[in-house]
Length: 241
Length: 153
Image 1 (spheres, rainbow over the protein chains, first blue to last red):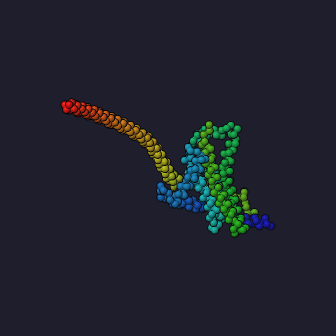
Image 2 (cartoon, rainbow over the protein chains, first blue to last red):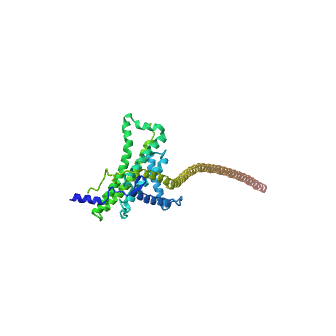
Image 3 (cartoon, each protein chain N blue to C red):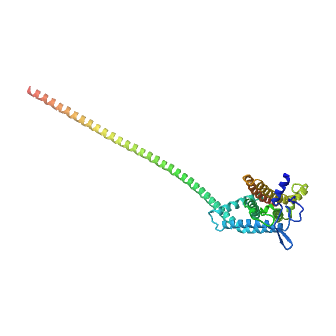
């Protein structure tokens, strides 16, 4: 009886429901694009406000943006290395900002107040399509980074300490995007579900610590995603001796 | 009843992968280019310009500091040599004045001695001359007395 009612309650959370957009033959998850456009729009507005009047003595928003820039540069430089980190810094930074803004936007903005005909708005990173897209971009990037930096010598990496490593390294090329996408997707979706269930069961006070935990997880996931992406690229461009 | 519908649904489900994936990928790539021109490039320019400015200033300050230290050391050696030179001059002058003083003292002593001796000789001469005269007068007087006595007889 209890189990049954719990399931109905879960059902009220509308897990796995989507707002479908049909364009010709293709179908899209409309709620993912709606939230991502709102959040990225806010991000772009924030950034253009901060970079509108750049001064040598930074003030206000420029300070924050410079701190962010410095943070991303440190991340890229430590993982990728002094030589090529400049080429990849915008990509790593975009991943970080996109994931961070999506996670926090999903957690902080009360999307549920906006009613959709089907599905509900939430963090774009709680949709498997988004995280797989990001993870595949990372895979493409590290292949491109390795091949453009070392040419065919990139494949030495697969037999690097010994040729015995070859099957494992090939397997890694599949597990890397898989783990990247599922880690992010799972964490963010789980956070949304936990908060949703708690809000549904106990609407007062109790969900607040879980919400804070969710914010923490969201920030950590953004950092992990960007760091791992940078690490994979760094691994691909690293020179073995 | 079971509304989860995780897998296998033709419509919906958590793992419903469709055209959202490539479109999102394109969107992220576009965002990378937009953020690069809007955020990473301008902020990077400003930050790196400032870092260069600061490091240049630090290098310049370091150069100036080492120059100052060199000049200071130079000055110190100059000061030391000047001091020892001054000391040498002072001691030389002291020696010279000492010598001059001694010479003058000796000269004056000699002169004084000479004039003392001369005076003594003169006194002696005059004394003996006076004594001669006195004894001559005494002789004359005695002769006169003798003559008078002899003539009275």
